Every structure is written in structure tokens, then in C-alpha cells.
Amino acid sequence: MNPWRITVLGGGAWGTALAAALRRASQQVTLWARDTETAKAISIGENPRYLPGIRLPGDIVGTTDSAHALDGTDCVLIVVPAQSLRDTLDGLAFRIPPHVPVVLCAKGIERSTGLLLSDVAREHLQGNPLAALSGPSFATDVARGLPTAVVVAGEDESLAALMALRFSSETFRCYSSDDLTGVEIGGALKNVFAIAAGAVTGANLGASAQAAMVTRGFVELRRIAAAFGARPETLMGLSGLGDLMLTCSTVQSRNFAYGLALGRGESLDNLPLAEGVATAGIAAKVAADHGVEAPIISAVAQILKRTVTIQEAVQQLMNRPLKTESE
Ligand SMILES: NC(=O)C1=CN([C@@H]2O[C@H](COP(=O)(O)OP(=O)(O)OC[C@H]3O[C@@H](n4cnc5c(N)ncnc54)[C@H](OP(=O)(O)O)[C@@H]3O)[C@@H](O)[C@H]2O)C=CC1
Ligand SMILES: O=C(CO)COP(=O)(O)O
Image (tube, rainbow, N blue to C red; front, side):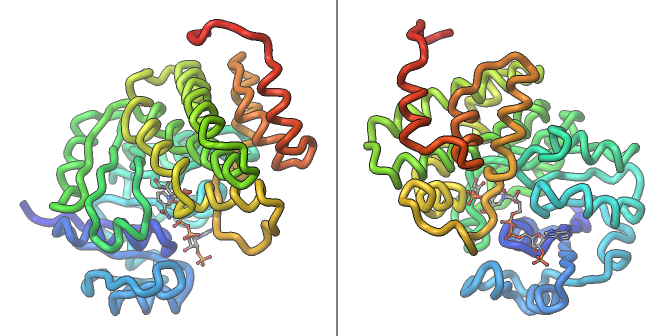
């Protein structure tokens, strides 16, 4: 099998880690970053700004030249933060060859529109098949080559399976799915619950509260996904339950760490990217627009807006009318 020429757009932690994983899967990888120092560093096997101390495969090509990165590419991974996807496509979509598959790797909902990232991409890319890569996978683990499993979902099932085959290696196992919407929603919303989990820990509410919050959060996740037409079983998988288990349980998650600082009343300035902060408010609105009850997402959105305290939010959640567990 000849290697694919794969372009990764985005030189942050996740773009760099995915470039390393794809290179280990014997693909030819070019990573486009907007920052010259990052692009140069990638070419010599490191990204000191986002993945300090991690040695990358030495033959990833780093560049700031988008034409060089995208001319003749076989597949494009977009790995900038969710709220930067539109800007990135405004600048680069014209360079992405028609019909080349485009894989969205960010986890979020566009704050200004409530759109899933595939809908944002569809506004810019008419002929390109779209896919999403998601699942429980910290950039530091993937960049180090630790064993990881993710899911690649696309509207075209056979193309998703082909991408999963191309991207997989001994340490990076890709499952495929045709439920693009379910996989996108799982990745986007787990960040909001990871913030909640961090806040529960930071505010010393106890391990029982933590388990209750994650379980009932999972119910909200499945309800919202169903309202979007996704399959419930998708959310039982890597992008859903799997990513909730990961990011709601460890401070290695930036969203959990953000919630932890919030719960402890510490400064939130200068914390690394926590996608759930931008997604919480719009997710609460999207749920309401679809007639879906999502009290935990709403609570996180209100806490982030400082319209309620964590203690008030807990009181509200505990005093909701009683009902059966399946409601
Ligand atoms: N880190 C992780 O473990 C994982 C992250 N993800 C998801 O991947 C996405 C990206 O996260 P991650 O890489 O960690 O974030 P980082 O903060 O590490 O990096 C973000 C990167 O995006 C670049 N960027 C931001 N805005 C733009 C723009 N408008 N145009 C071009 N480049 C831009 C930044 O460039 P610059 O440096 O110049 O500012 C930087 O290289 C998020 O949605 C996250 O949820 C998913 C799974 C794992
Ligand atoms: O999505 C991730 C792991 O699957 C990364 O989570 P954080 O962005 O919270 O660090």
C-alpha cells in the first residue's frame, strides 16, 4: 500500500500528536502551523511549546506555507480549536483539493451559531467528504506512542473504514463509524461534563456526587444526540462514554483542570485551552431549542457566566422534581 500524503492543519498539542501517530502508521505527513518557530521545530522532531520534552518522529515536514502543505494532498486533518475552525477555513479552504477527505479533529460546537463542526466545514467545502476523529486520547499519550483507541466517523462508511486503516498503527487503533453526528456530539459535550467533574472535585462535593453527575450527564448527552438524529449506541462508544471516563477522572484533562480551579475558587487566567468553556453556553441553548432537558449542561453554563455559584447550582439540581431514572 503506497503511503497517503496527509496534511495536518494546526501545530498545537493535538495536531502534533496526530502527525506523530500518522507518521508511525507509515503515512507521509506534512503539518501546517501558522507559527514559524513551531513549524521549524516539528521538522526536527519536537514541539517545545505544546509538547515539551516529547520526541516526535523526525520525518514530519513542518511548514507555514499552506500551498506547500496542501498541494497534492490525499487527506486533510483540521486540528485547530473549534472556535477557530471557521477562520481557518476562511483562509485555507480554497487550497484544499476538491474530493479530498477532510477530517475534523476539534471537539466543540460553534459558539456564535450552534453549528456542529461538520456543518461549519460544509459551508466552506462542497465536494469534500467529511469525517470526525474523536475518542479518549490525550495528546501527550498519543505523541509518546502510548496505546490509544479512537473512532473515525464519516458519512461515507467505506471511506471512514479506509481512513481508520490508514491511520492505525501498533499503538494507535482507529475504529470506524458512519455516525458522524453522534461522534461529533460525544466529543463536543464531554468537555462540558469534564468541567463539571473538575468543579465537583474542586468544591469537595465527594466521589458520590462525582459519579451521579457523570451518570446523569451521560443521560443528557444521549438525549441531545438522539434529538440530532444520532444513534444512542454511538454514545456508548469511544466518543461518548469512553471520553467521559477519561476526561471526567483526571486533572490531565484541561477541561477537568479548568473545572477544578473553578471549584477551588482559584484564578482561571492563563489556563490552557478548555473547549468546554466556549461550548457550555451554546450547548445549553441548542438543547433547549431541541426541547431536550439538560440541567447539568445548563448549570455549567450558568456557573461559567457567574449567574449562579457552584453551591446554588447543586441545590437547584438536587431539588428538581423526582422522576423515574429513565425519564
Ligand atoms: N490536546 C489534546 O489532548 C486533545 C485535543 N483535542 C481537540 O483538538 C483541538 C485542538 O486542541 P489542541 O491542539 O490541544 O490545542 P492547543 O491549544 O494545544 O493548540 C491549538 C493550535 O491551534 C492553532 N490555532 C488556533 N487558532 C488558529 C487559527 N485561527 N488559525 C490557525 N491556527 C490556529 C494554534 O496556533 P498558535 O500556536 O499559533 O496559537 C495552536 O497551534 C481542540 O478542539 C481539542 O478539544 C482532541 C483530543 C485530544
Ligand atoms: O479530548 C481530550 C481527550 O480525549 C482532551 O481533553 P482536554 O481538552 O480536556 O485535555
